Image (cartoon, rainbow, N blue to C red; front, side):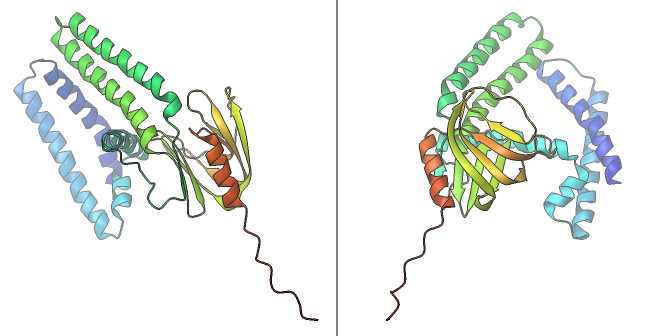
Length: 273
């Protein structure tokens, strides 16, 4: 049953998006078509709601029940978009994510700010220009306007996610992040070495993860055992070398060095003769 609902959602939900774009663009959609479409989508949502309740009664958690009904790539993509939008709110409110009780917080968004602001400005100019050029075609104008506005929010959200999700050292775990799509936790006992090195070119290689900011990384972390850094759609990616950037790389390097160096035991009293 859940498999059938998954396949049906792949068909009905894109059709619903097309109808919404048509309505936004001023296209007249026959009432019969709208009625049938809304009835089908409503029936799908009702069936998925009932299936969700059945899965919950079988003992599945909320996350597990939703995962049974919605394909994992869709869930991960939706979660990514929601994190971007939430990051915009955190950015305005100046509320960083995941820093409570941390032993060290290391921002990493400063060196990309100018590029991201410039990109957002170009997107705004493109939105205004296309709105003027496409004014005679309401449908195309409406669709392009929605996409352009979302693109501006997406670009700002990427920078907001980087600004509100710094690297964090807490509880014996190094948490490395990039925008809203990378959140890697590395136990300190898996770190073999830490190097302070600035690199501006990064070739793709198996087992390596480069979290560059402004095309550069400044700290390299080598691991004793690989850790999984899942890709955007959930595909596993074991890595043993992670290169990251921080606004203050010396602070990140120093904090990791101190955290990995166990304090020497206090000397006891001299033996009695």
